[in-house]
Every structure is written in structure tokens, then in C-alpha cells.
Image (cartoon, rainbow, N blue to C red; front, side, top):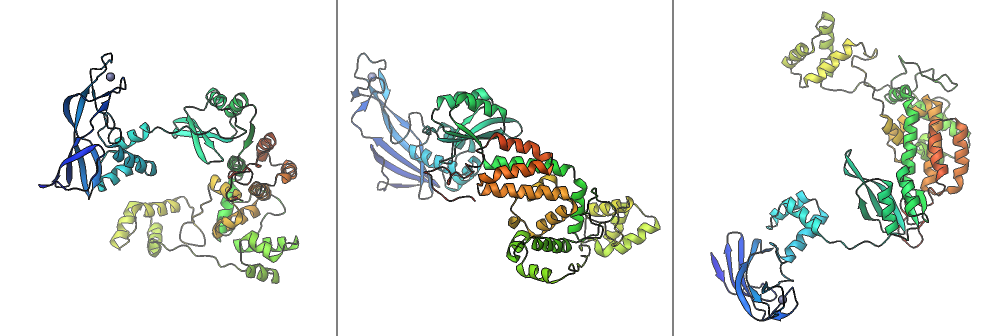
Length: 504
Ligand SMILES: [Zn+2]
């Protein structure tokens, strides 16, 4: 134990009496030196000390050590005869709250940290910083924080908010100009939102999703406000429409997957009988070749074609100079741990051994490093006869999920990887209905990104005449909210005063 009287440590209103260290703990003893204290009940100052007592709050760490203050503080006798209280404890407003176990500055540091990281991470950090507190304590500090009420927004975003995903939902209100959440409502009912809107007059624009509850609430609570759909929800609704469309064309998804693998169209026939139906085995490169030719015939420049198909301009030039589709080398099966043992497995299979566990054990004796499950999968494919004629390895045809495919539809082509773009092109080539939907989808996405409101009506007309029933419901959404993408997700351009860059 070391003792010192000289210590560069200031405690406002106190005299430091003693500083002691115990391993990683620093104990600072100090006495209050204020002559008077004010009664918190009647506000009258008093100089009559009733008794002394000790408080020991924790403080910010010092020099790598935990710090505990041992404060000699006093109770005063109230000098007001009519006061409810005979005595009162002196207040230390700058140092530690009335019943606090931590100094104000320690709590402030913990609060600032917990707002930046999670409570659990915060708790771990506090241990490293020698001011250890639990995650629960950090959460309590956050919950007790008094936030200044946010000003009523001019442009309000309303959306679902999950208190617990799949379980309990509320409503989140966001100031879309300041990009700051304004409030969380405990549920998603029209009454709650309408009451909030009535209590916050002055909202000019409300952005919302398709929920009828929200529509009713905004109409009742803020009738003056213009209701708009934001770009995210528009694109989300569009993506849902594409999923509904693709649900009908699962076979086309599978076929496209085969094309991307360089596998000839084999056992399954295309579900459409149209002039674009592919009779010959088609590879991605060939599809791309015909796409290049088609676009060139429509008058697009080489540069535009290259950009649209996400290929190099040299490739475009080469394709245009040639009459023959490029020859595609069929890719062999991917080598895996099992490849070297396939001949053995085939021999054993023809000998009549169909037991996957036995085969696996035999292979392990030969040094096969792979797992039992891959042998079981292999045998399973033999059993069901789903074996590729051209290869001794089982075929792996993995079409994209509906949502993945729909996602490719609403992404700009330049943001897709080469494989995704190849798959997309194959998909459009397999099915003319999908191709038409893709063209409409991309037009809509561009329109929304660049806020080309004037192109909405022609688009609606084209969507109507396309006969794609899945887009009908989506069309209704668009016609209902005509201001749809005047106000984009990033409100910068459209909302006069606010600055920032455009998302487009
Ligand atoms: Zn008093």
C-alpha cells in the first residue's frame, strides 16, 4: 500500500485528504468544504451541521486503475422552522447524483460509449478500461437518458418496426429531412398513429407503405399532408410482382441454370412454344452473341451494347464482325475430393454394392478425405438415376430462388456479376414473358432512380398492354399514389432546402 498527499486530482467543493492504492484500485478520500448547503425542500441555506457520513461512488479510471471516491459529506439542520424536513443531506450536483453509485462523469462516459456500441460490447470494453459495469447497467443508463424532444418533421416517414422480429411490431416515425428517428409507437394501429399525427401538427408530406391502417391514420390525423410512396417501397412492391410472375416459370429458372453451367438443354422441354423457343443446346456465350446482334439491328451503338450487356467493347466488335456464334467449350465437372474415387465407386455400384456407408468406409481405407454425407449424396443420385450422360459426376443444377431472381431484375445490369448477368440473359432467352417483364422492370427502375415522372404514363400503358397479370396489382399502386417518386428515398434533390448528393 502506497500513500501520498500530493495528487493532481481535482474534486470541486472537496479537499482531498488521502490517496491510497490497492493493486489496481485507487481510493481517494476527500472532505466536503462548502460552508453552507441549501435545503432541497424549502430552498433556505443552512450552516448547521447535523452529522457526517460517507459516500463511496465509483469514478472514471485514473492511470489505468479503478477509482473509488470516499467522500466525507454532511447532513445539515434546516434553518426554516416551517420546513417539512428537520435535516437534509448536502447535494453534490456536479459530482454525484443523490442516490448515485457512480460519479456523473463516469455515467456520462458510459452513456456515450453505449450509444455507439451494443450493451454487451460496451460491458466488455468497460472491463478493459478498468471501469467494469454489466450490460444490464449500461441498458439502464441508456433508458434513463432524458432525450430532448425532436422538432415536428415537415417530411415524415412511417414504417413498420420490429420490437421482436416475427413477434411484436410497432411503428417507426422518421424525420426524412434530418434522417433521424422521431418516435416509436407501440403498435401498428391507425388510432395510435392518428393520435400522434394530431399531436404534431405541421407535417406536410408523409411517406408510407401500402398498409391500409397507415393510409387511414394519415387521412384522419394529418389530412393536410400529401401521402407518397417512397422509392424503396415502390421497388419492393415491384420485386414482389416479379416474384409472383416467376412463380409460374420455375421450369424456366431451371433451364436458365443449366445454360449458365454450359449444359445442353436436355430432359425437360421448355414450357413455352413460341418462335424464340430454343431447339438447339444454347450456351450463355451464344445467347449473348444473339443479344448483341439483336441490339445492333435495333440501332444501338457498340458502346451502348457493351454497357447494357456488361461485356467489353472488343467482344461486341468481335461478335458483330462474325456470322457464327462463338464456340463454347463445355466446362468439365468441378474437381472435388470425390473425383479421384469415381471409377472405384462406379465399379462397386455395378457389382451391386449400393450401401453408402459401406462404400464410404471402403474409400476411407483408400485415403478418401471427404465426408460420409457427400458419398451418401453421390449414391443417392445414382439410385434415383439423376446421372449425367456426359459425365460420371452427378449433375448440379441449382436454379436461383425466386427472390434472388427477382433481385436481379430490379438491380441495374452493371451491378450484376458476370454469372448473374449470364443467368439473367439465359432466363430472358428461355421465356419471352420473362423477357418482357424484365424490360418493363428495368424501365421502371430507371424511371424511379432518375425520377422521370413524365415517363410513368407511357410505362403504365405498356405494362397494361403487355398482358402480364402479375404487374396489374403493382400498376394499381402506382396510379393510386401519383406523387410516388417525386420524393425519393434520399430526399435531398426534391426537398428544397436540404443539401446532399442525389442517390440517382
Ligand atoms: Zn427546509
